[in-house]
Length: 330
Ligand code: PBG
Image (cartoon, rainbow, N blue to C red; front, side, top):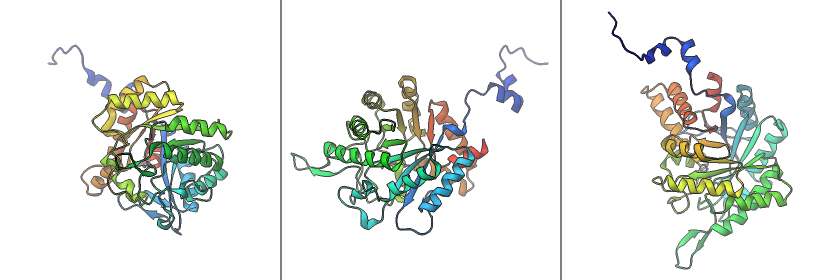
């Protein structure tokens, strides 16, 4: 004899068709953004040890990978440049150079794919500086070595302008300098690039989850970024950062990393008047891949679940190194 249970939620879980009918969150290919690395001075794509399936690309392999992404339905890529070590300097000048690897990569992708693929440029100096910081260093009035916020803004302005000229549809300041969105917006407008959008890394935390990325870009950083990226303890401060970026003209805001900050993402999604992106960062990806390689988890399913969770928390766009595989499964 069955018991009388007034509510039986299992009724709606009986079959794939029923579950599909009541599914509240759906990932779509068009939600996904693929971050990519283009490296100078290599002849063959180089796999990043700690990020299986992710490569430092040559310009040629970059183009084939963008093609593969587009065929899978991923029509947005975010490009990072990896210069030759000898091209790094104190001000990251290779990042501003129109002939630098990032701008050449952008130009090649834009030339090949036109407006069919949305092309995002990473607008930050850390890959290009010999000290690995996101801006230029100075000694402050108390004798401390610090990243010079306002001097860095001038470099970001020039960098964004060059990226727009190279074909980026979107520039994405990720250095967490105060005032960066307003400065970049003004610089783009003054250069006639009012069509170029800004995806602002608004709530970006000083996170240990960025670990594998340092290998991915051959970072020279010693120390950390706690004096400019956010304290992982602070959600209220994330709201301030998001509000400032919206006021300064951001077209998108971003929360980064994603999975450890779903609370921040949810608050941001509830309050932002502009689309909210979330970045499943290198460490999030690497942990899933590593546990999968050991046979401890089903990496494909865990990846899909993690990304679905990010969407459920409120992300409109999700940057993930697994974008192509996920898109193919959908
Ligand atoms: C800095 C930048 C970083 C990432 C994206 N942009 C590294 C950092 O802030 O230390 C990390 C991305 C990832 O871990 O996947 N320009």
